[in-house]
Length: 111
Length: 112
Image 1 (cartoon, rainbow over the protein chains, first blue to last red):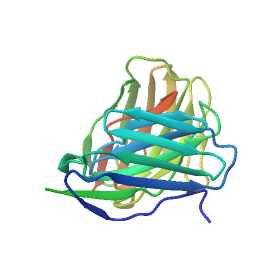
Image 2: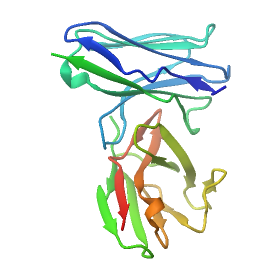
Image 3: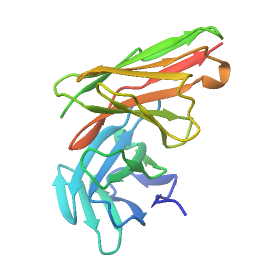
Protein backbone atom coordinates (compact mmCIF):
# COMPACT_ATOMS: atom_id res chain seq x y z
CA UNK A 1 0.00 0.00 0.00
CA UNK A 2 1.30 3.42 -0.93
CA UNK A 3 1.77 6.03 1.78
CA UNK A 4 -0.42 8.47 -0.14
CA UNK A 5 -3.29 7.31 -2.32
CA UNK A 6 -4.89 9.46 -4.98
CA UNK A 7 -7.39 8.48 -7.65
CA UNK A 8 -5.67 8.94 -11.02
CA UNK A 9 -8.87 9.84 -12.86
CA UNK A 10 -9.32 11.20 -15.41
CA UNK A 11 -12.05 13.33 -13.89
CA UNK A 12 -14.17 15.10 -16.48
CA UNK A 13 -16.54 17.91 -15.47
CA UNK A 14 -18.44 20.66 -17.28
CA UNK A 15 -17.32 24.24 -16.99
CA UNK A 16 -18.67 25.90 -13.85
CA UNK A 17 -18.88 22.68 -11.84
CA UNK A 18 -17.47 22.25 -8.36
CA UNK A 19 -14.55 19.84 -8.41
CA UNK A 20 -13.56 17.69 -5.46
CA UNK A 21 -10.12 16.10 -5.39
CA UNK A 22 -9.00 13.86 -2.57
CA UNK A 23 -6.08 12.01 -1.07
CA UNK A 24 -5.79 9.54 1.75
CA UNK A 25 -2.63 8.76 3.62
CA UNK A 26 -1.37 6.30 6.17
CA UNK A 27 1.46 8.10 7.98
CA UNK A 28 0.09 9.88 11.05
CA UNK A 29 3.30 11.91 11.29
CA UNK A 30 2.36 14.03 8.29
CA UNK A 31 1.56 17.58 9.34
CA UNK A 32 2.19 19.71 6.26
CA UNK A 33 -0.14 19.28 3.31
CA UNK A 34 0.08 20.76 -0.13
CA UNK A 35 -1.81 20.72 -3.39
CA UNK A 36 -0.09 21.29 -6.72
CA UNK A 37 -1.33 21.84 -10.24
CA UNK A 38 0.83 20.57 -13.05
CA UNK A 39 0.31 21.32 -16.70
CA UNK A 40 1.85 19.03 -19.26
CA UNK A 41 5.64 19.41 -19.48
CA UNK A 42 5.75 22.04 -16.74
CA UNK A 43 6.89 22.00 -13.14
CA UNK A 44 4.23 21.67 -10.42
CA UNK A 45 2.69 24.93 -9.21
CA UNK A 46 1.87 25.26 -5.52
CA UNK A 47 -1.83 25.99 -5.05
CA UNK A 48 -2.48 25.47 -1.37
CA UNK A 49 -0.37 24.90 1.70
CA UNK A 50 -1.86 23.92 5.05
CA UNK A 51 -0.53 22.86 8.39
CA UNK A 52 -2.37 20.31 10.54
CA UNK A 53 -6.16 19.96 10.38
CA UNK A 54 -8.61 22.57 9.17
CA UNK A 55 -9.76 24.49 6.14
CA UNK A 56 -8.03 27.08 4.02
CA UNK A 57 -9.56 29.13 1.25
CA UNK A 58 -7.85 31.05 -1.53
CA UNK A 59 -10.03 32.40 -4.30
CA UNK A 60 -11.80 29.51 -6.00
CA UNK A 61 -9.76 26.94 -4.12
CA UNK A 62 -10.50 25.43 -0.71
CA UNK A 63 -8.25 22.90 0.98
CA UNK A 64 -9.46 20.70 3.81
CA UNK A 65 -7.41 18.49 6.08
CA UNK A 66 -8.91 15.88 8.40
CA UNK A 67 -6.02 14.33 10.26
CA UNK A 68 -8.28 12.06 12.30
CA UNK A 69 -9.40 10.38 9.07
CA UNK A 70 -6.08 10.88 7.28
CA UNK A 71 -7.94 12.51 4.43
CA UNK A 72 -7.34 15.73 2.54
CA UNK A 73 -9.40 17.45 -0.10
CA UNK A 74 -9.13 20.25 -2.61
CA UNK A 75 -12.30 21.91 -3.88
CA UNK A 76 -12.35 24.05 -6.99
CA UNK A 77 -15.39 26.28 -7.44
CA UNK A 78 -16.61 27.58 -10.79
CA UNK A 79 -14.17 25.35 -12.64
CA UNK A 80 -12.72 26.67 -15.89
CA UNK A 81 -11.19 24.92 -18.91
CA UNK A 82 -7.88 26.45 -17.85
CA UNK A 83 -8.09 24.34 -14.68
CA UNK A 84 -7.59 21.24 -16.81
CA UNK A 85 -4.36 19.77 -15.51
CA UNK A 86 -3.00 17.09 -13.21
CA UNK A 87 -3.44 17.82 -9.52
CA UNK A 88 -0.97 16.37 -7.05
CA UNK A 89 -1.33 16.18 -3.31
CA UNK A 90 1.86 16.17 -1.25
CA UNK A 91 2.68 16.01 2.43
CA UNK A 92 5.54 15.86 4.91
CA UNK A 93 6.21 15.47 8.58
CA UNK A 94 8.48 18.47 9.01
CA UNK A 95 8.63 21.83 7.28
CA UNK A 96 11.96 21.09 5.62
CA UNK A 97 11.57 17.43 4.79
CA UNK A 98 11.10 15.87 1.42
CA UNK A 99 7.53 15.52 0.23
CA UNK A 100 5.56 12.35 -0.26
CA UNK A 101 3.34 12.71 -3.31
CA UNK A 102 0.10 11.17 -4.40
CA UNK A 103 0.05 9.79 -7.92
CA UNK A 104 -1.91 12.75 -9.26
CA UNK A 105 -5.45 13.16 -10.57
CA UNK A 106 -5.96 14.29 -14.13
CA UNK A 107 -8.80 16.82 -14.37
CA UNK A 108 -10.54 17.85 -17.58
CA UNK A 109 -12.96 20.77 -17.54
CA UNK A 110 -15.04 20.86 -20.69
CA UNK A 111 -16.44 24.13 -22.07
CA UNK B 1 5.14 33.08 -3.73
CA UNK B 2 8.76 32.02 -3.67
CA UNK B 3 10.41 31.46 -7.01
CA UNK B 4 12.62 28.61 -8.08
CA UNK B 5 14.23 28.91 -11.48
CA UNK B 6 15.53 25.94 -13.44
CA UNK B 7 17.68 26.07 -16.55
CA UNK B 8 17.69 24.88 -19.29
CA UNK B 9 14.05 24.05 -19.91
CA UNK B 10 14.92 21.71 -22.73
CA UNK B 11 18.13 20.05 -23.87
CA UNK B 12 19.04 17.51 -26.51
CA UNK B 13 22.41 15.84 -26.24
CA UNK B 14 24.32 13.03 -27.83
CA UNK B 15 24.75 9.72 -26.09
CA UNK B 16 27.91 9.68 -23.98
CA UNK B 17 28.00 13.39 -23.26
CA UNK B 18 27.22 15.13 -19.97
CA UNK B 19 24.48 17.64 -19.26
CA UNK B 20 24.28 20.11 -16.39
CA UNK B 21 20.97 21.41 -15.05
CA UNK B 22 20.84 24.41 -12.74
CA UNK B 23 18.30 25.13 -10.03
CA UNK B 24 18.21 28.52 -8.34
CA UNK B 25 16.09 29.87 -5.50
CA UNK B 26 15.59 33.47 -6.55
CA UNK B 27 14.21 35.17 -3.46
CA UNK B 28 15.11 32.93 -0.56
CA UNK B 29 17.98 30.83 0.70
CA UNK B 30 17.59 27.09 0.44
CA UNK B 31 19.89 24.89 2.49
CA UNK B 32 18.12 21.89 1.01
CA UNK B 33 16.92 21.32 -2.52
CA UNK B 34 15.34 18.25 -4.03
CA UNK B 35 15.78 16.69 -7.46
CA UNK B 36 13.00 14.69 -9.06
CA UNK B 37 12.52 12.72 -12.21
CA UNK B 38 9.15 12.36 -13.86
CA UNK B 39 8.09 9.93 -16.55
CA UNK B 40 5.08 10.61 -18.78
CA UNK B 41 1.77 10.42 -16.93
CA UNK B 42 3.47 9.49 -13.69
CA UNK B 43 4.08 11.31 -10.46
CA UNK B 44 7.41 12.73 -9.37
CA UNK B 45 10.12 10.34 -8.24
CA UNK B 46 12.59 11.74 -5.75
CA UNK B 47 16.13 11.16 -6.93
CA UNK B 48 18.18 12.94 -4.30
CA UNK B 49 18.25 15.58 -1.61
CA UNK B 50 20.84 18.26 -2.17
CA UNK B 51 22.41 19.78 0.95
CA UNK B 52 24.34 23.03 0.85
CA UNK B 53 27.96 22.46 1.73
CA UNK B 54 27.72 18.70 2.06
CA UNK B 55 27.12 15.57 0.03
CA UNK B 56 23.77 14.87 -1.50
CA UNK B 57 21.60 12.06 -0.20
CA UNK B 58 20.50 9.72 -2.97
CA UNK B 59 17.40 7.58 -3.05
CA UNK B 60 17.73 3.86 -3.42
CA UNK B 61 18.46 2.84 -6.98
CA UNK B 62 19.80 6.22 -8.08
CA UNK B 63 23.42 6.09 -9.22
CA UNK B 64 25.32 8.87 -7.49
CA UNK B 65 28.21 8.65 -9.96
CA UNK B 66 25.85 9.13 -12.85
CA UNK B 67 23.76 11.91 -11.37
CA UNK B 68 26.22 14.32 -9.80
CA UNK B 69 24.73 16.91 -7.49
CA UNK B 70 26.52 20.03 -6.30
CA UNK B 71 24.95 22.50 -3.87
CA UNK B 72 27.68 25.09 -3.69
CA UNK B 73 25.65 28.00 -2.37
CA UNK B 74 22.39 28.68 -0.59
CA UNK B 75 20.70 29.62 -3.85
CA UNK B 76 22.13 27.18 -6.39
CA UNK B 77 22.09 23.43 -6.83
CA UNK B 78 23.19 21.64 -10.00
CA UNK B 79 22.46 18.19 -11.34
CA UNK B 80 24.88 16.79 -13.90
CA UNK B 81 23.84 13.75 -15.88
CA UNK B 82 27.13 12.13 -16.83
CA UNK B 83 27.70 9.89 -19.83
CA UNK B 84 24.05 10.24 -20.76
CA UNK B 85 22.23 7.40 -22.47
CA UNK B 86 18.85 7.35 -24.20
CA UNK B 87 17.26 5.76 -21.12
CA UNK B 88 18.20 8.90 -19.17
CA UNK B 89 15.77 10.86 -21.33
CA UNK B 90 13.17 12.22 -18.95
CA UNK B 91 11.74 15.31 -17.29
CA UNK B 92 13.90 16.49 -14.38
CA UNK B 93 12.52 18.92 -11.81
CA UNK B 94 14.09 20.59 -8.80
CA UNK B 95 12.39 22.05 -5.77
CA UNK B 96 13.19 24.01 -2.65
CA UNK B 97 11.12 24.41 0.47
CA UNK B 98 10.02 27.62 2.05
CA UNK B 99 7.06 26.36 4.06
CA UNK B 100 5.49 24.82 0.97
CA UNK B 101 7.78 23.37 -1.67
CA UNK B 102 8.33 25.42 -4.82
CA UNK B 103 9.33 23.79 -8.05
CA UNK B 104 11.40 24.85 -10.99
CA UNK B 105 9.97 24.80 -14.48
CA UNK B 106 11.53 21.43 -15.22
CA UNK B 107 14.11 20.31 -17.79
CA UNK B 108 13.20 17.98 -20.59
CA UNK B 109 16.28 15.96 -21.44
CA UNK B 110 16.44 14.01 -24.66
CA UNK B 111 19.48 11.85 -25.29
CA UNK B 112 19.93 10.79 -28.91
